[in-house]
Amino acid sequence: AKDPVRVLVTGAAGQIGYALVPMIARGIMLGADQPVILHMLDIPPAAESLNGVKMELIDAAFPLLKGVVATTDVAEACKDVNIAVMVGGFPRKEGMERKDVMSKNVSIYKAQASALEQHAAKDVKVLVVANPANTNALILKEFAPSIPEKNITCLTRLDHNRALGQIAERLSVPVSTVKNVIIWGNHSSSQYPDVNHAVVGGKPVREAVQDDAWLDGEFIKVVQQRGAAIIKARKLSSALSAASSACDHIRDWVLGTAEGSYVSMGVYSDGSYNTPSGIIYSFPVTCANGEWTIVQGLPIDDNSRAKMDATADELVEEKALAYACISE
Ligand code: NAX
Image (cartoon, rainbow, N blue to C red; front, side, top):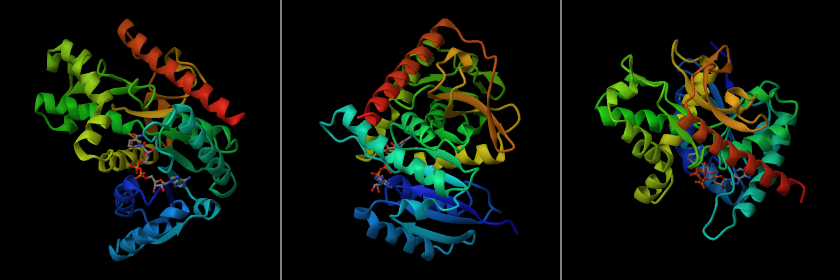
């Protein structure tokens, strides 16, 4: 039998946490033959509720779940973890300035970076979910210099999956027949969902849909605004889809992407596609042997270029705001 993998989930008492931990314990993230030990972190006001989640995990009697650590101590939470899914953060509340939210998250991600740096496995793979996801991941990278930069990523797979879902709904085909959409840039409404290289049942999506106006207009808007639409409908933000997409992100990263298909991940930019280096930007990637590689050489038209640059500009601006918070 395989040795258990230690998976940290921060913000585990929250909505996404509640949907995510049973998926991990069932093998959805790392495979049906991979035992796991769950490390769950939350803050003291949520300690009792976190303990309730631990009780339910015990009650569910998951065969793959070999242990549960539920704690409000960051060092204990990070001890020897192989995978870290960072869901905890400070949410934007009504009336709050962007700078104030950034400042709270910068201090959280700075502290948690140091804890991972000191206590996690040296080859820990990190996925940041909490918003602003790309910039939180960048802060984490900056303050955990011994963790390889390739190991620090953020979640744009939910946006990717939303794009697949919209194409499948439009064509009334199973979502599994659609692939190679791309989310470029920031996990925010400036993201660019690109279908120019996407295929459905082997055919280019543009040929199958035969409605460029929809693909270049409404489709993009719906994907960019989907988070807000879920909040409007559910009075709560996306949780099951976020949890499921986080599992997809880690599973593909660890176990590899299928031949001929790529997925979207927020990764440390090396300047590919003339994006600014030094930011966490979402690219199309393939994964093999536990490593992601940016898909190279896709032709980019002028329309795409402008949208890719606009979302990059927003990330550069977020980075400056985050750095202003650090030096204060
Ligand atoms: P919740 O407010 O339900 O849960 C967040 C949890 O984090 C709470 O239990 C809170 O006590 C905890 N927390 C706060 N500060 C912490 C700290 N310093 N250490 C550990 N835990 C801490 O939010 P939820 O709906 O679960 O969303 C979590 C985050 O995911 C939010 O930042 C949200 O904006 C972000 N999202 C990101 C998505 C993405 O695709 N990247 C999509 C879904 C989601 O909106």
